[in-house]
Length: 448
Image (cartoon, rainbow, N blue to C red):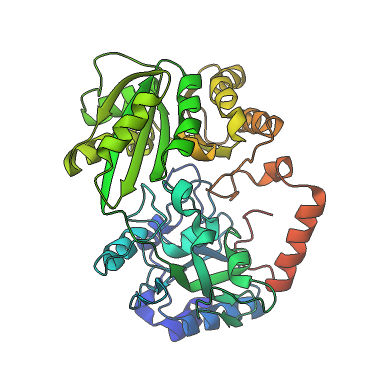
């Protein structure tokens, strides 16, 4: 009955019930979470989304919201047979408003598509991810994704100037004017950032754009110890005004990437830790970056890119980590953040904590050093075994950190939420959820 109603709303060709077609929508990117769904519905407009959500609210049909399905915490998987609401068809990109430096886009647009389109007008979007060609705008708003350039431009919430969204009762809110100043009550758009699809379905967003650097310089710095690398990352933040990214990875991860993709090691000597640094400016910043690097303590070796292919080659050592780890099997992915002063302690202690919880496990660490954000990847542990998750997240909490820096809580960390949020905060979140999604149909397995 529901499938026929959905066909009337969005068209028969956009309602999928064939198990072979539905299969790719019911498993997450990691393979750790797999669910089932009777139907996938792919609306093509805000009106169709509103009709669908209103129908489901009236009939108490739960929905799992899905963009590019690149999430790493099970947040877009229909674990209990929910209807999948796919937003991929909402892929319109409006004209760039050069006066305000803003653009309005559909939630199904990928980061890569947006970057390519606005680049034709001389602009750039400040959020960048390794999954840029599949991660959607709606999904990154839902998780408040950070990515590679938070140091320079901020997270997704910092880019959002307004949203159009469908709330849990099927009503539509739209605030897409892009005003820089508007103190007329609650900022519902930014409230939806990081809500993981539990409060509303974002259908369009008004986003701020940035002027890209005319020229970029990239350097790979090698250090004997994690401590030296972390201290250098802190120093870089203060001495280089054009700094856009400072990425950390370790020798085991570098060896894995080189082995997985047949890459040559960047240095003849083996080091303990590495920083991938990118800076931009209106003039060539390569010499300036070289001067800054020369002033840092503890640098054992440097590879400085002189052209675009060399820059891409250095970035691959960092960006290929996720795909290389995936080749080892299903990984536990714990995206965490700690105060910068405790970053070194976290990186040095995590492997021992993991080994104590699961002696056969392997730990792979990389992340955004300047943000205090580390992606803890653990292989060799059964997907359902949460002992390593608990051990690592307890450590993070003891260091005054967050159990989720940018991937969200999803399903993977739902039972650990109290490590980062007080009972009063969780109660307040539940109250907001009840107000905006009174029937509780939006992503019911996620966050709370």
